[in-house]
Image 1 (tube, each protein chain N blue to C red):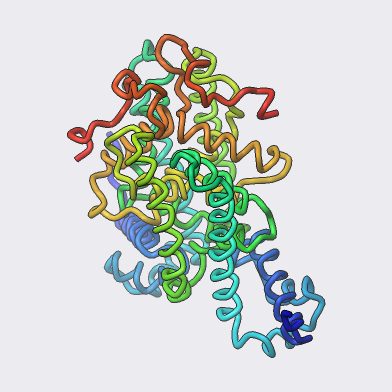
Image 2 (cartoon, rainbow over the protein chains, first blue to last red):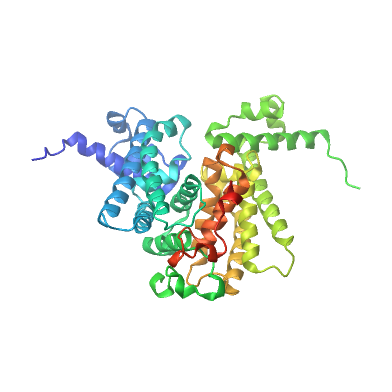
Length: 217
Length: 217
């Protein structure tokens, strides 16, 4: 039986949840400790009882950001079962990752929003976590290529970085008024896997992956 | 005959060039005024003779960032001539924009690197410039769709934002060791217009846009 968290542990979690929410909504420089404390329902001074510094709090939010995105993506991919074609695994991973980015308030959304904004030392300490997740993605992409499901000739590192740019920048521009997270995810998948261009000869319907207005609206 | 710039104007330009270089290489929080002054070959205190504040300098770099990207993109697109198919105009714009992002030291590269990092007021003052450039892109994308050259069903605003994320994030990760700017641009164009996925039936060669290893290496 799991030991229930102590009062102090519960407060620590509440502070982290509040920090993820405030960072994901306002970015790094726009998020003040006083806002995070208010969101968590505690005094600003009490933050220092749980975290040595603003940086220590940020680092833990970033660590959890990668962890949440990684867990969400891996569990959705694994739910496909062992026989799923690699490109289906990649498609599912794209949907899962951008889904975590578009969930405002989420740790992964906070990560995408602020990772380029935090001091370099903080960025560097987050690299190890990022690297493991990046390698997971490299494997997903490489397996789809090896199965002949991707067009040949791509540098897979460059592909991964372009994909992450498209997905993570959504933390900046996305507003629910733009459509559901599922709609944005379908745009991403359709654009990067099947391309924006109509196939020559106008055989759009034959290409299999074209988003249909009814599906998207 | 153009009046040659005064000594003061030349110094101002040198400071701006230095600032663009330092911001594009180190990001916003990593760029110190003392580094910018050293790069420009002047005393740090002299910066204030030309710019009222750090923010005023940043704002001018951001304004020029949009201007340079806009000029570079528009002139490459216009060089295609009036009869070019809209999708060719879009393809050329993608190559031109990411080219400015990958030119380290460039104002556009500095813009992409720091726009998410600067204080919100500074971001807001850059919106008007961004909007005009964004509308130019909206038109490029819409014209390709109207010509039947894009698969139907995409929300073109979402497409534009996903494209900008993929392109602008390259300011963060790109190093010349990853390949030439042209190589990265071809990956972008190939991925977003023709898609990563091999067409059903393995007709990769028939799809027209597949990058060929020889072209890319």
